[in-house]
Structures are given as structure tokens and as C-alpha cells.
Length: 221
Ligand SMILES: C[S@@+](CC[C@H](N)C(=O)[O-])C[C@H]1O[C@@H](n2cnc3c(N)ncnc32)[C@H](O)[C@@H]1O
Image (cartoon, rainbow, N blue to C red; front, side, top):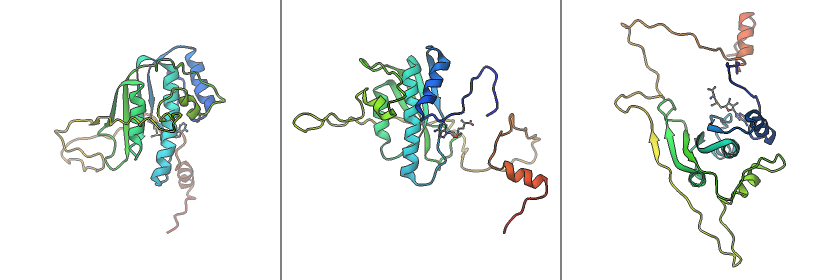
């Protein structure tokens, strides 16, 4: 992405422990009010695989949040509401005062995506999250001791705690705007289209545009 004034940008894989380390270095021990993850993989259409990869992005963002958020801070992440999403809600419910699943109007109704909104970060008592590049994300969270039922000596398990987060469809319900639809503009209104504030820096169609400019683009029918 293009540089933005007063914003530090990193181009890196958030699931790589070194990336979280670099972000924490930038904070120099300071704490954040808000951590937001809009990360999403290029979806394959295989829902189980897409949800798994998305879950890894959320876990990495949450790992960062537990290391850098102020007490009372907020965490928002894009999620795909798959089969086991209530487990994530219940895990987040143990770290935040309030967990809500929100679907803003700008998000297409046909898309599985929604956003988990977690308010009021409460560090888990007795757990001091420390990033260790030699530990996997799963190992990092294991120390928090949530999300896995405890196995007792008599081989019994504690029941897994599951919660359902309230679901909020955001926006004004008074209009019938549908983000899946396209709309024709009313002819009598004077409208001017605006150019994008910033053109994409490396769009996937860049090569096609260059070939088109040179008259070398071949369309195979
Ligand atoms: C929905 S887009 C985010 C769009 C962004 N909010 C914007 O306004 O341009 C999802 C982004 O997540 C990024 N992404 C996917 N996997 C990632 C990973 N492992 N680490 C970092 N970013 C990743 C993709 O490259 C993509 O740019």
C-alpha cells in the first residue's frame, strides 16, 4: 500500500512470529487502545480450509492484541462464521468484557464475513503473555489455559464452555439498501464521479493494462 503520513507500515506475514516481534518493537513497550485485523486469505471456496486459514490470521492478531493492548482496550477482527465460531466467541469472552458479532451494511449479505467486536480487554489473571518466536501460536495460547477441556486423572473432561455472541446487523434499517445489489442512478440528478484517492499500487491486472496500452493485449475467445 502507499505510504500514509504518520503511519508506520510493514509488509509481512502476520502468522510469522517475527512479524509480531517487529510490531512490538515499533511500540517500544507502549500500549495500544485498539487492535484491528481486516486480514483475509484469498478464499479457495473450500469452506473448511478458508475458515482454518482465517482462524490462523485471527489467532495471530489476537496474540498481538494480548501483548500490546491496554487494559480496557478493544479488538476487532474479520471472521468467517463457520461451524466452530462459538468456540472463538467463548475464548474471546474470557479476555474481554463484551463480545459482539457485527455485520456492517457495507459487507455483502452473501459473504460469510462478519466482524467480531471485543470491548474492554481484561488480561487473564496469572497469565503474562510474552512473545517467544520459538513457540507456535497454539503453544502461546495453551499457557492461557482456555479453549481446551482439562483432562482429569480419572480421564474425565470438564465440559467445554461455549457462548453465543449477540449478532448485530449494523446500519439504518429504514432504507432498503442492499450491499449485494447494484443500483442505477436517477437521471435527473447531477452527479460527478470522483477519482480514487489512491490508485492500487500493484493490482493483479497491472500487466494486462500495460499490454493494452501497447496494443499487445490478446483476448482469447
Ligand atoms: C480484505 S483485505 C484487507 C483490505 C484492507 N483493509 C484495505 O482497506 O485495503 C485482506 C488482506 O489480508 C491480507 N493477508 C492475508 N493473509 C495475510 C497474512 N498471513 N499476513 C498479513 N496479511 C495477510 C491480504 O493480503 C489482504 O490484503
